[in-house]
Image 1 (cartoon, helix red, strand yellow):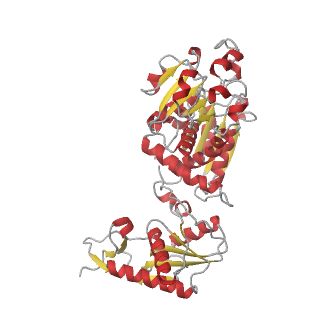
Image 2 (cartoon, each protein chain N blue to C red):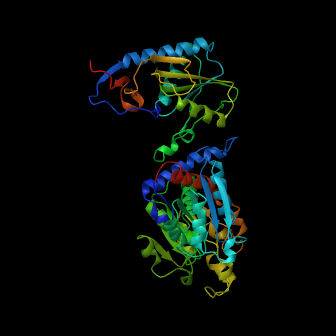
Image 3 (cartoon, each protein chain N blue to C red):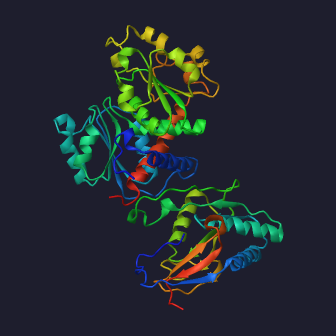
Length: 194
Length: 308
């Protein structure tokens, strides 16, 4: 769930679409992040993956699945809904609240890896950090994203990045995942026509 | 989303379901170490209570505080109302103080509707006269759904003083919207003529509790208001209890899965015996807990976004 920054400009006159990652690429990228998590956390012990809805949720499940395939460790997966912690609640019509599901062992004292599809302004992650604060006290928090498109508005960076995509504010990045949209794809809309 | 919540009939199926679903998420907060959400930070909720109330006022206060709203409690006793201030002037005062929502309980039926025309913020009806009490109906529906897994197709008996009950009216409206079938049960003097048809088509009326009990999923007992006991609606409290009170033998005639509800406060020994009130079928304590979650959901959906 990418958070549009306040100063986003209007969509361009002739929208163009460019596929950045095709289905096989998305799977390779997820595999690589899973390997990186295993490497950086020395085997993913004491680790919990928390997906940020909507598309962070299936991504977190996939990462846990890949990690268990590669190293045979079961990493607990949960969902962290951030709706009530957003800083733009009042700018929009009331948003529906989604479920927050923590794994049975909780997150206290664990290494929590937040998982989202696109890292943009960083405001979603800030909201997630606030939400995390209210549901427990993790030992440490890391961030994994499929796409980092830049334009941060807060001092936030990802620990695991699937793909860096340099973008302009006029462009938008759309991630689709098989579990929700039927196909795995990352597309860039509104770039210079090629 | 609607701006005010004045009647159980204001809600269509989608809105009512959204409130119940949101309430289910709000309920998870109660199980946390930090029972607080930042969603209504900086919003002001005024509890404007012209009638005595314990659970409803406390429930709204807890709900607003858990969502980080600022709460101002106003009770008519000890306020300028005793000096003769009108509802409209009080409303304009609250308006001037920047109330984002007013939760009102008033002895006059229709007072919240009037108030809604005078203030810019949202108005939530917390019980007006003998008219409506929509958040009670929502928490009752939530409790039924939590215990029985569904609302559509449920058979619900509402038993007692329907004539003076705002809980009954709101429940009939909301439950029929959500697909449950309501039967109003009580002495003929306490069930208004043609109320069933006037409120929601498909609602039944019965004057015989014993014949209704074997076929219901939910029995909702209404409080017999003490001030009415000597008003010759029924010959004596004992006779009322014998014909319309829910006791152990009557409870055992209910289907295995059926639940017993009561909006509180109870007259133990009058409309419900302690054996029934304290049995595992009784949801009376759950109703209070669920009340906070449902009111959180209502306040969030009315105030959380920019719905103006």
